[in-house]
Length: 531
Image 1 (cartoon, rainbow, N blue to C red):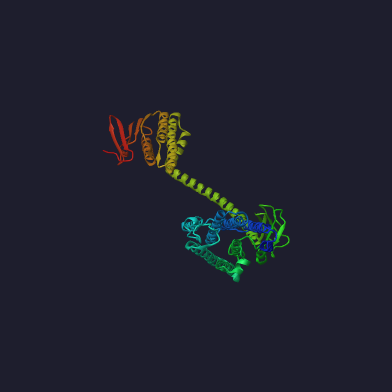
Image 2: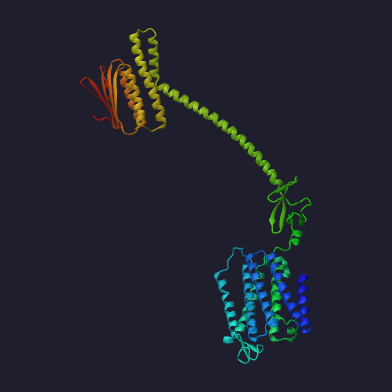
């Protein structure tokens, strides 16, 4: 701030030197250079301080327009001698005069919005007004609706004697309206109600600027003599207004860290790129150092120190994680107990599973034992008889044992398959009957089979067909001469040559008749037999 006032005082001193004709044109050149330097540095400082990007862009444009304004002023008064060129440089003054207030309106709109916020179409259309006004100014020589010259001809005899026309007053209304709107919106949108009287600073500066403009236009000689450089004065006023907004924190900036650190209760520090602490909060201990990037330091007292890179350095903060550490330990303990309980439950499940499997196996064994009880007892009886039997009789007993064993084997196999499958493939039916046929052939019984099946058969039907074959085999065990089997998708037909009366097996599902000494047996698969 002292540096800024020093530049302004030096520039004003150069104005006084030029006023008293001391030093020739050099004081004017130095003054112009000082003001240009001042606003270049102000633009640089805005880049370093302003956080919100859209607001920063508007302030940058505003600073550029001020530099253009001061450059035009320098060219007009210090360089150009041609009246026409000087007049158009004067017209070009109105580029910053008209557009700087518009940028102030945009800044007021952007405040309080996110960085991704986009101006609405109505806001963009607002820029057409200053564009039209500037077009009217730059073409004033054609219509003279902004300024009218006494002679009626621009530049004759000079540019000094002129009068204001309606468009000029429209420009005044535009400038005053935009300034008032901007300041009111800044006051309404500020998020820091505790800043008190400082909130009025931008408003007071705006009022002073408007008062200066009115007095200057009314031709007050004191104002023109003391503050006669109107271009510089308005640039300084605009810069002062927005600097006061930054100072009052109406516009967010990254300044005020010292006050923040004095007020905060957070343990935090700011370090340079080498990790040297530059600023330390009151609650940050001397042991708080800058950890390596991406790492954290956990102190014995539970304080975790972390760091994150920022522009030109690091921000360091500490948070007490003792409670979290204790909670993590409890979670680890609970996890260990959970894993232990999980293992116990798994072991218990495996034991229970084995128990269920043994129970199921015993149940199946008991069921099969009960189902084949008659056959197993008969096999035991035949084996007992074989001990003292003569070879012919023993051979008969062994044939019967073979047939009974074949039945038990294939019947048990069908039982297990029917528990798992609702329908059995043709292959299972063929394996079952083929094994029975081989056993009967081994027992010197002529036996054959023909398969006409094309699709799977229900498990219950296969069991029923096999039980029918078992019944016939038991009834004709010693008198069976031949057996021929034909199986299709719809029925099973049997041709049996024996002396035994097989009419007893006739039922609703089985049809039995005798022709030419052969017993013909027919049963439908999946339905009842037809007479």
